[in-house]
Image (cartoon, rainbow, N blue to C red; front, side):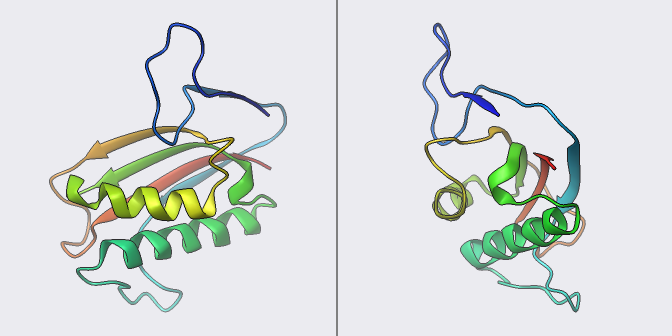
Length: 127
């Protein structure tokens, strides 16, 4: 992987890279939500707990495909409330290498498939 955090002429970044180049098989992970392995909601009303569960679900899906959180090249994050952005960033920066952040998009949405979900994240990774 090659990380291009801030190519010349690009605006400043906060925890993501403008581009990531990689070779090899790609793993696409569907949007993960804050449900545990039994389908129970985690962190009702607690954005940090929800983000942690979503990253745990991403890690599980990536491991099944022969990858891991350290191999993520792109995240797409959906938040229902931008006030949850600090919680997302704190967990992301704890679990992903801040020196080699993935390319990322963040979208505020009016709602997710379940009204208690505050966050959903999908990922692309190298196998």
